[in-house]
Image 1: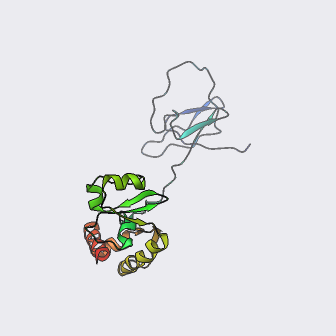
Image 2: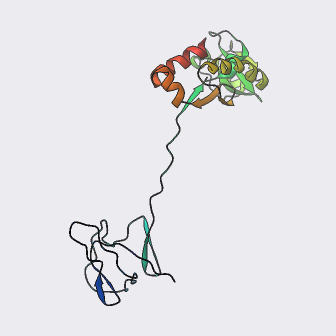
Length: 200
């Protein structure tokens, strides 16, 4: 094995001699080959701290020698703006905003209008249960192609803020927030601008 060198604030014992004594006003002097610590040595354990020799969460023991891992810098988290239009299938169906309506798939409610929620209709209900809860509810069959087609104008309107967006589903789109937030003058101004573009 090759010779390794270490730095210690306190004298270390190597080959029966004291080495690595810190010079006044300067860094510790290098010491000789690292001598593995004997197991079962009597005496108090060194207090944890820089250069104390105590093992920390960022160290491990290999062959009796404490090996310390250097901290790895993590990349900064990327912030995103998520635009979510709840119950988009209802909006895409073209029913009036004040209509009591629900969109169903395989006889199960998957989206409801605001007035339908007020009438007690909930997502996950069976079709007949929704009709029993509100006899005047307007039932529309789900059409994924229609949802995607009518969401395209919303996506195009966001091109004013950012050239690239990611559509994760009809009614949901996301994009990076760093540039647009800086252009708009802050996150709150960006949120207001996004809401204006989507509603318009």
